[in-house]
Picture (cartoon, rainbow, N blue to C red):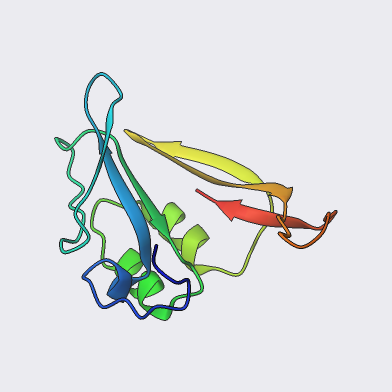
Length: 115
């Protein structure tokens, strides 16, 4: 098992990508190899890319994605955290609030989830 403090130097980690999955037409996920940066095009189907938005390179990566609508890009790089839901052809994005998980104790703190 890898330590949470381990240094990662693969292609995805260097961009703030925590993990990425590609789903086939039946909905079966396949983990995208960490040595490659996920490609998203209209013909790639459903791709879930989980980003660490605190990572400075994640925001840079977001702004370089030609398939991402400007409104979605603005939401991901902005500090704004009001709940919302938006969409374009083939893409849904938004912010929802959920309880922050605290491993050591119960928590009643709420934090934003960007998706």
